[in-house]
Length: 111
Image (cartoon, rainbow, N blue to C red; front, side):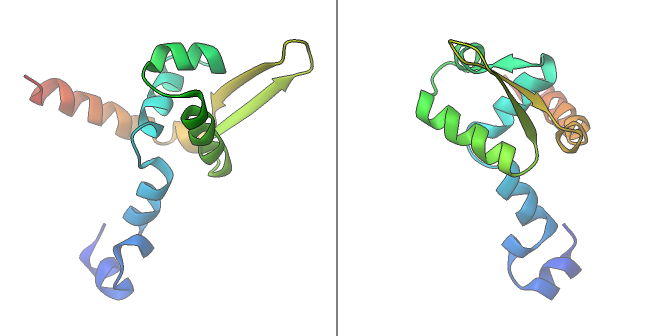
């Protein structure tokens, strides 16, 4: 975020940084994107198991938000029981180098 962008807008939420945080912010979205970057496609129940302490309702809402923002795709197979798989979109894959840098920062700075 450049200061000129912030000074021009006067509101950090209207900047590129604000947009980015609206798409990936929150407790679970980056974990979901990280999981999908490691293995895809991933089914809903498998994702729930791998993430751990997230409720089905919260996972579902986070996935819907990521899909609405164009970060993931949802593929539903017409069978019983229903089978749904999630994958990253090219827009999300463009974010992967940044996620990798965050992981490297964590490796360098965790105790």
